[in-house]
Amino acid sequence: MPIEKIEIETFLKLSKDFPVLDVRSPGEFAHAHLPAACSVPLFTDDQRKIIGTAYKKQSRKIAVEIGINYFSERMKSVQKETVKIVEEWRNHHPADPSKKIDHSTLLVHCWRGGMRSETVAWLLNLYGYDVYVLKGGYKVFRRWALKQLEKEYQFHILGGYTGSGKTEVLKEMMKEGQPVIDLEGLANHRGSSFGSLGQNAQPSQEMFDNLLALELFKYQKVFGPQAEEEDSNSASQSIIWLEDESRHIGSVGFAPAFWEQMRNSPVYFIDVPFEERLNFIVSTYGEFDKEKLVTCILNIQKRLGGLDTKNALQFLEEGNVKDCFGILIRYYDKLYGNGLIKRENSTSVLNKIPCVSVDSNNAKLLLSVL
Image (cartoon, rainbow, N blue to C red; front, side):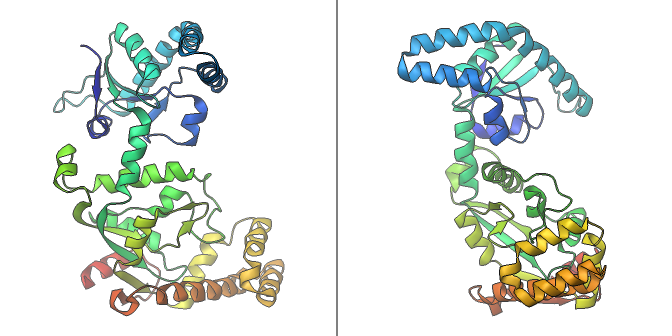
């Protein structure tokens, strides 16, 4: 089968059924990539830099010659890495007769859909693989991802003071078949000064955008270029549940249009008693290393105030974790309450649901109210 170049949404659709090879340099991949992609770099970071410099300062011909020399050394290892990736893919994606999946099919992309992806596609095609190349490369995917963040969606926002168990409620709602996007899960951060505890490193802003765009796209009713032609602004009529967040979750933030939609969407506020929330927070964060907790408190000391910071640290030093977190929850309650008030039409978009305790079953209560 000849190598075929395909559009972004066709590429994304096929990426559910076939391995994706990102042949950009390791540094490009580490910064941000398609979540489904595996890194099979054609050149190292240094080699890519040398080729780029030759292209700018000397000529395209010299740059190509340098690239060919690097490629000749890389050919066998590219094929071996691809075989390993395909084997791992087969182990995690058993052949589905109903889909007639051919495990000899590969998807390949580079930065612009040019020489790197075409070269690797040619090589793998020689080895018997059917190869699809992303037209326009990662650059086109990036433009597509940013466009998803500008579309109009119907959001329902799950609100609640700190320690209300909002993440647990959303997970339960997901089990109930509700469209849910776990923003904190995508960001690897739980939102507060303590949000990084127990989490993996956060993605880059670009990678967070990519992850969020694909989550939004997952819930769009119409798949394919025809959806873009019919309505380039409105993405879907499905209601998507999100947790109420600040403009930033740790080091990553929301695109302006997406954030504006969140702020103007109806908020369903699960109202859990203070003591219940305090117990939940103590059970969630109380076992972390004391020094890490001290660092988290010091990170907000200017906003927390001198006296509350001093008392919180003193309680923590004495092993009185509950009273320490009591101070912190009161601070976050005030902060969150101010954020609710600052919403436009806050009284009309806010819906309070009284809850007895922190419980994933609050999801069922919320859905019954709706």
